[in-house]
Amino acid sequence: MKVLIVGSGGREHAIAWAVAKSEKVDKIYCAPGNAGISEFAECVAIGAMEFDKLVAFAKENEVDFTIIGMDDPLVGGVVDAFEAEGLKVFGPRANAAIIEGSKAFSKDLMKKYNIPTAAYENFYDMDAALAYLETAKMPIVLKADGLALGKGVLICNTLEEAKEGVKEIMGEKKFGSAGDKMVIEEFMTGREVSVLAFCDGKTVKCMTSAQDHKRAMDGDKGLNTGGMGTFSPSPFYTKEVQEFCEKYVYQPTIDAMAAEGRPFTGILFTGLMLTEDGPKVLEYNARFGDPEAQVVLPRMKNDIIEVMEACVEGRLDEIDLEFEDNAAVCVILASDGYPVSYKKGYEITGLETFKEHEGYYCFHAGSKFDGDKIVTNGGRVLGVTAKGATLQEARKNAYAATEWVSFENKYKRNDIGKAIDEA
Image (cartoon, rainbow, N blue to C red):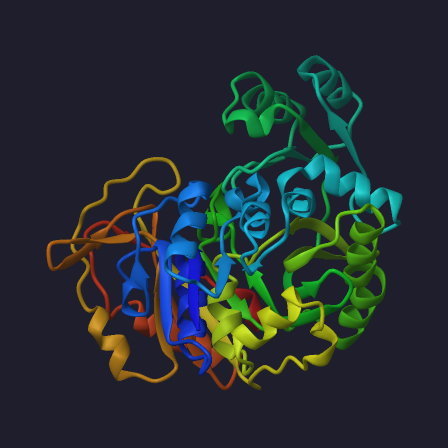
């Protein structure tokens, strides 16, 4: 069968790698793709938001199955556009992708259906938000309502910081129209865990757990990014936590969406905070996390196409998800200066080394061809992933592999997975 993947990051590279392993697939396209993805797929110069062109390409090339990797097209209704033409596509429709597209919607959904989350208020007016802060307890969390590339969350320790944050989000529109509305919520403490799940509108099948590192610098300092590294599984996601979340979070979320007339098919990403009062939902995403996909997919034993087809056809209950009994760690190699300002266009060398080592992967996030060279083309450039028998071994392997590749202004955090030692 022919498969089209929509997106251009490390997540889509990991998906392409997994799809290429399927015996059912003999041709992969990726729109627009990147230099790394081109190893597995024919990259086509169509943007992820060019729905008409994507649909036309799928029809003209007799694509059997399309996988949407990114949040923007999902929230924008790309799945609806494909389905309207009778094309098979994996991902939630726009009315279900709103669970990621609007933080105010997802918070209201959790409140209505008693899904554990932080206390919060939604605001549509800057002055009202500023007035609310005067009596609020610090620290506090400010969230732009819409999509902001994983960066629209501010943790404020003082009233002055919080007021400045509200002005940035709603007044200066630092995150664009994502800040037309905002959520102010209580600050929770505890371990963070990310859990990805396949969904078919009624059944939920969870993948192995992972943990992301959002801040740009060591020690969880600096600005929020799209993710600087991950490890899987999380030693803090115990059997007891898993059972609680299956009963009170994952299935209730899918049931709630169905009850609201928004059946959710695709990947539900649940970001959890393991608080003293039990697990609580930090956020939902409507697609694979990036870089979480880069540690979860290499550990998955199943044929990804078989699982995704079961989701689209409403028979996910027939699938048993299986994962290797090992661990994986991903360290992001970024351009120095990310996420604020950075230079690109530098040649990347040493990529061929990964082909010589089993259990090591280099997923491209921001790369492109410049003639016959591969050069940097983004803030997050590569995701270096390695497996190991234990998390400690996987971490050691991943950091060793980051030395195999070079480019000018290469930057990485040095403490990805450090929390493993505290488990």
